[in-house]
Image (cartoon, rainbow, N blue to C red; front, side):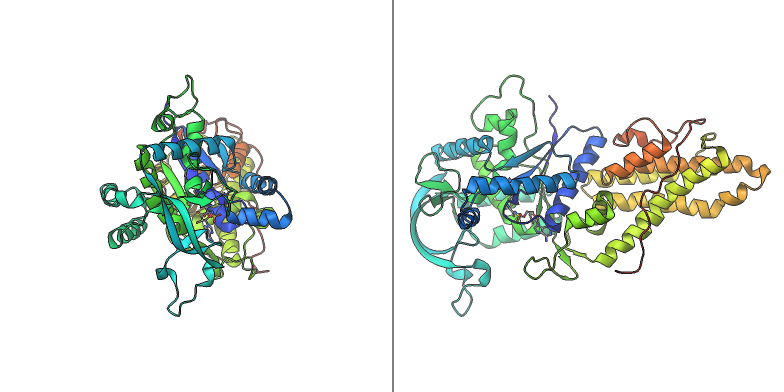
Length: 520
Ligand code: MSP
């Protein structure tokens, strides 16, 4: 059984409304997953929902519902969201799934048995909103608490702690020796800076069930439930383990059932936003190290979207509704825009105008117009029949293909689109340079016209393959118009010369209907 390329997204809080930030992360992960599959790698792509914790318990209480009923209702909405984004995930985890809860309990038991936890009394401050303990360092200079913490309570409480601090030197060493572990590099430096500058506190991994019951009970002390992050992070591991992944099962002290279907652990990419870096680059590797499990290869950290230069916020109404955009402009246009606009790393800024400009210039006038002209002229001048093969643009097409491929493999989907558009632009320029509409009027130029038409249609066929991870439906439409066999989701189709002379293409249908450039 081959190990699959395993890619995950953060699991979204079930009680938040799906927004642009969630959509971006899921689409980027989907693009990387599809690109790998297209290149012949078996993939396991996991996404899902984070459902435990105080906020969920409180919201359910306010509605007079059980937390489970409340989560089940919201999960339907999230399921719809994921479907609308066209994700190709292989599994969808909910932290309330029995399969996940069981593995979390096993993992806790193992870490407890091997001495990684201790119980201790704590007196201090607690933010209900952020479900975290605060120290004097978190106070404002005037002694007040920042509004981000919500209501802050003073507590005296016994809890269970994870000996995080013991692993600090090991983690620094691991990150120093594995530059690919946290990407991009400035995020790696951020983690190293944090680890080198302060002593890691042990992590409180329990909450008394009397205060918070909506969680996974600690198997060795039923008066407590598991801290929500300790539960949530384990999703990446619990699903492969539950599906019989031999490496994950072995780390829990078991043996994989005969004929188990999956080999995925360790994960190749955990794709996350910048705000949850510490959980993924500090807590998670230490949890796995304590368990004796192999670590994920890369934590890939994206930036945050704003809209019109301000934070996305439901309360101020500064939101982008991905579902409304998809309804108006189409799924592939949305996927194209978010991937092309924001590379993995910096923060991004959504403007409706920016979206319209890219749609019109790069999709409608770029790729769409190229296909339309190519198929139209082939129909008009050659009755839709592909002429003799010719390789005038082959070198440039191959270069674009190679560049696109290496960008996908380097987790740079924005770079992949930029490389693919070098070919879109080159082919459109080729039309201007060769003027096939003039050539068509001169019978002596018939061979030249054949060569121009072959190059244009062949570029379109190859472009379908290059853009497929980002725009799967568009790629299918291109193949359908060209009536070519094979799948654009197979990278081997990007080799120059795949169009056979004598092949009959279909009728031209616009890929991206032009929209008015005037702002609404
Ligand atoms: N439930 C935790 C993650 C647990 S992972 C084991 C969580 N959920 S979240 O719903 O708040 O965020 C989910 C993902 O969306 C995170 O990676 C987060 O960074 C990302 N984003 C949330 N808002 C965002 C933007 N405005 N822009 C881009 N991504 C953003 O954190």
